[in-house]
Amino acid sequence: MRSLTEGDDCGETEPPWRPALNTITIVGLGPGDPGLLTKAAWDLLHAAEEVYVRTDQHPTLAALPQSLAIHSFDAAYCAADDFASVYQQIAAEIIRLGSRPQGVIYAVPGDPAVGEATTWLIRELAAAQGLAVRVLSGVSFVEPACLALGIDPLERDGLQIVDAMSAAAGHAPPFDASRPALLAQCYSRALASDIKLILLPSYGEQHLVTVLSAAGTAQQVVRTMPLFELDRGAEFDHLTTLYVPPAGPYADFSRLLEIVAHLRAPEGCPWDREQTLQTLRKEVLEELYELLEALDLDDDAQIAEELGDAALELAMLAQIAAEEERFRWPQVMQQVCEKLIRRHPHVFGDVEVSSVDEVLANWAAIKAEEKRGREGEGGKKSSGVLAGVPKGLPALALASKTQSRLAQAGIEADLTDADPIGLALWKLAAEARAADMDAETVLRELCRQVADALV
Image (cartoon, rainbow, N blue to C red; front, side, top):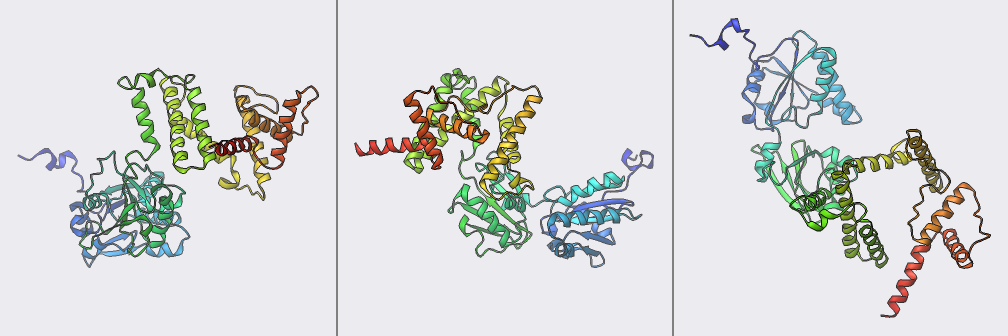
């Protein structure tokens, strides 16, 4: 008796390893060892007459039948200005080839769903044109890399996987420094040098990193070195992966958020659980003044410690606000990042400036526009040139801020009834501004000098 899956009555489908008509088939070539090619991929490529590959620089291709015509897109890398253009070009060509009656087989390194931009471009374009796409998964670089490094990607709070080019394109590590990270496709020494410069401020020169070449193949090489030596001596190609161990178990702001949330939890600390946004006002002010004192002393260790204490207060305020469903930390981060980008169009946009004065003028204009937008949306209405000046500032700082706002508006303050001492202090603050000095800082420095002289 036949099983239901054997009979034609059940609508028997073509096995997935056979070439399909009018279909784009994307197949993963694995990390480089032909033995790691899946059976479905092996059977498909042995039954095919031709295959298009993103790059022919892959060891598995040498194990395929001599009769298989292999067409590479390597020439596109030399003709285009950037990788994004290359991937767009490849995707467009695969769509054209897939529109043929015989369809097309397109092979990529590793797994088509891991670190392969062309897969997603092809699927998007194919969906728009009604073309069928099937994907034969493969072993990605992640599994052999983890085996070679002796790490489990699900342990130690989870392994982070980042494209090396994406990491190098930024200005800070795009991942959590308290968790391990794999940077894939570190294909050149120049790219490794760029990554080193990105990592150094967060990890330091002596932080050990590992360069893993050709993971999962007979040519596998593992080299561990201090970060400052990353771009010295080691060979790099498209099968090179960089492993960055954690900078420390608590080396990221997310760890502080977790600890604060724990302190506020039912099993946490009674004192922390009693705090509110209002009760923390005094704590916030004290920590900021202690940070100012550390800055005055120019003591690196103390500055770092006080920065941490200030960050604790911020995390506590955000946690309490989230518990009370007022706002959440991601919202805080989203808003401040959007604000910085919006107020720096000369950095993140196409505005050109020639001086700091132009930067400040643009900043003021953008802030004014933001205020009008908030008021137009029914937000709290503010008026006057001094709107938004914090009244809780120390007196000298408040005077300087007030004078700056008045100067921007072209307004002279009416001081006819001013107290003589207050007027004198006001004038001193103005003199400090004219000399491009902060009166508060100058007076604090003088007090510190007096205190030091008495020791």
